[in-house]
Amino acid sequence: MPSLRQVLAAHAPLLVIDAASSRVQVGWLEAGGAGRWTASEEESGIAVFRGIEQLGVDVASAGAFVFCDGPGSILGIRTVAMALRAWTTLKPRPIFAYT
Image (cartoon, rainbow, N blue to C red; front, side, top):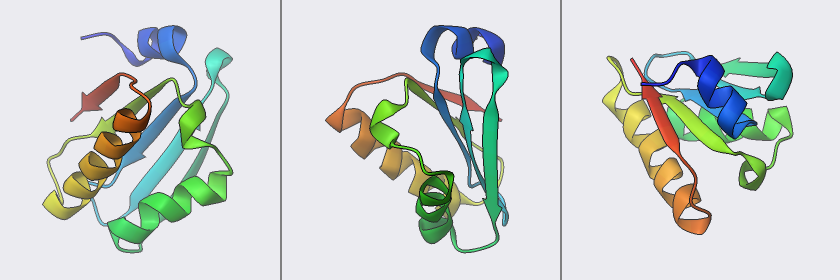
């Protein structure tokens, strides 16, 4: 498994999503280490998409996706999995998971 540094070097910018806990976090990491983050205690189906909106990023410009696959909220993980599946169907990109 490649390190985050390797994934960032090969695929930046990255959309990072952690919806496996009650606090949903969404991040945008760019080459060179610049990053922005947002967090919300809202339900994951709202928090993920609102977080992306708050960051002002275009999902289509992400070079890859990184998400937390647990342990934690199955609903949050499934919400992110659904979004990733839709986004990669529209434009294929790598998906990386972390625990």
